[in-house]
Image (tube, rainbow, N blue to C red; front, top):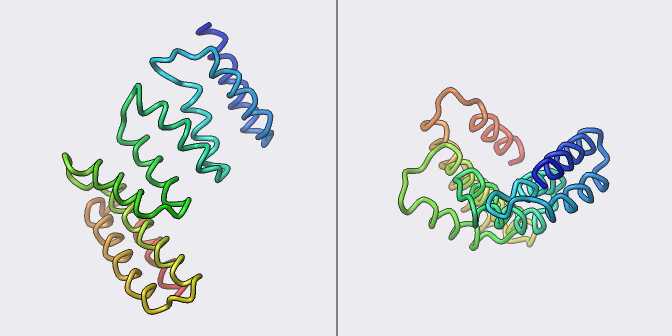
Length: 168
């Protein structure tokens, strides 16, 4: 079974790499039947592909299965990001708070906090709640500054800040 799973995962990656996304998803779904339930490698690859395709609810479903058997901060971050992209901001905030309760913030967690704040602000703006939205953008910028201070060599926080300022 192990060789079958690896072959199917490689085929799924190849299909995705050639923009044959529906075939890749089907291949990876078939690989799930043969994967090691203690590792869930097919679920992980499928979850990542679904994230890239903005299929956040389905991605969360597969990534949570991976997280159950092999917890990792990276997978947690991906679940949180997908949750925020589904506009489930309170849930994303809670997941992030739970993750950080026993550890220090890092650049990625600060970027996620910024993304959640920006998502809330954008959502409020779309509802015509301008004053409330304007209160959220400073939080986003504060978290981008925090991300930059935690990793001064990364250009990403500064680029995101510039994009935020340009949209204003």
